[in-house]
Amino acid sequence: MKRRDFLSAAASAGVTGALLTRAASAAEVPCPPPSVSVQGGSSAGTTCTPPPPPVAPGSAPAWFVNTPDGTWTKIAGSQGQRIVDVLPSPVPNSGLSGEDPQSLVTAWAGASMEQARGEYMFIAGGGHADYPGNEGYALSLRSATPAWRRISDPTPNSHLTALTSTNGVLTYNDGRPRADHTSGWPTWGDGRVWFPAQSAATSGGGSASPGVYSYNRDSLGNATTPMPHSDNGGSVNPWMTHGTIPGMENAGANGSFTFGCAVFDRVNHYVYGLSGFGYDRTMFYYWRTKTSGSSIGVVDHCFTANGGNPFANALWAACAYDLGIIVMGDGSPNQRIIVLDLTKVGQSGDWTPITNVSGSGYFGPTMKGCGANYIVANNTIGIGDPFAIGGKIYRLQIPTKVVNGAKVYNSSGQWAWTSFSPGGVQPVPSPRDVGTYTKFNLIEDMGNGQSAFVYCGDINGATYVYKIPIAGL
Image 1 (cartoon, rainbow, N blue to C red):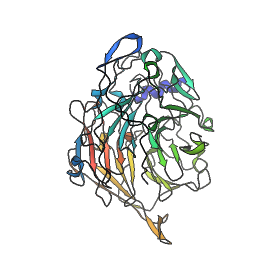
Image 2: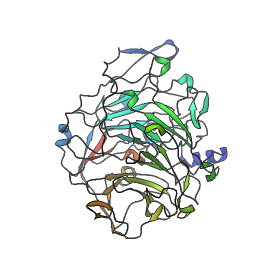
Image 3: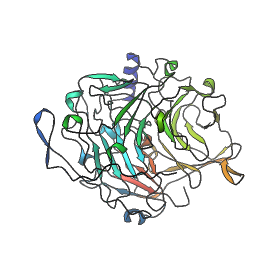
Image 4: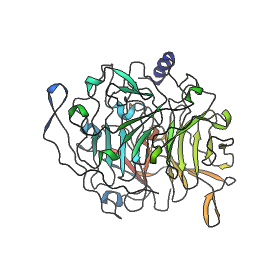
């Protein structure tokens, strides 16, 4: 599906627009028999690739240790290790023409990183008429031999024909969210993958909704087999719908929320949704959802940044949580950095355009997001877009100063852009991919205190890892 077709169809339809260690919550279970019962009483083969045992604390897998600092390498690219090798059977099909599981990665799809387990995940990608499956996939990066595995099964085909809305989120008639163009939305926070908005959900028109929903990764524990759907004996539904964004109706029926990005503020336990490249080209909206405690899932008001000025186009964003700011790349036509002071959310002067910048930066191709990740070791943001610029990485240095012995953000300091082209095996996206989004992601600790960027752009291909030096980017 072409993006312009989605925008046209959706518009005509009038859519409204500190690394934590967590104990395992389920015991390991063996692989299932060679066949399992599926809908309609038939049987189908099941692929089971148990994750290798986790590495010992304080260590990292040999493949990572042996990778030179500052280079790309590839993993999980052999037969039996790729996403294509662990697809469900039958493959989800809602009857729309052109559906293909490749789209769960390539159709304006994003990824997320669960830091406690070190898992890189694709959850419910595809959408519109591209792919309807809402299953989950995970790659354990700290494993000695990383291999993709399916961690939850999709809504069965029998439920895909009747579409409905559950608590403001577009769902299948089993109440689970439809697959959608996840783009820059999925982000990890407190054991869940959060989706601050829904873009181009599976349907003929690719409808969207200003609804917030999440995928509870913790509820699945460390089981080595996919959690079956409840129709097939599954005991856990990882999905939860949290309702619509209060005040988003002020954005008008223009879909301003449909494409954007999200970040996790781990200090205050919020996931922020940042709009930008939907239909509304006059305002910039942002909102937040509580990720823990008694208020988990409570969606805060939709804020208009600085009363609507400046307009911004959120193509990438990162949360410098220790400095109390969110840094965002404002794309065309502004091509600038803007910063949110987390103590001023919803107030005048909440977002500030940055003018004291040296070097030339990267803001992504027009209306296409890319990945941006915060490196706490040296207060930098690494921005990558393998779809558009290959293995090249842009580095943005945030200015800091020391006040009363503590390092803080220096709002009057000099920001600095640099870029470099690493050696090693260069990342290769699928020829069918349409954008990087959050497929370019970050694991903060590979087991030895060292971080790495991760990227996968093809269910038939390898996953790529860039080893960040211990001192930072």
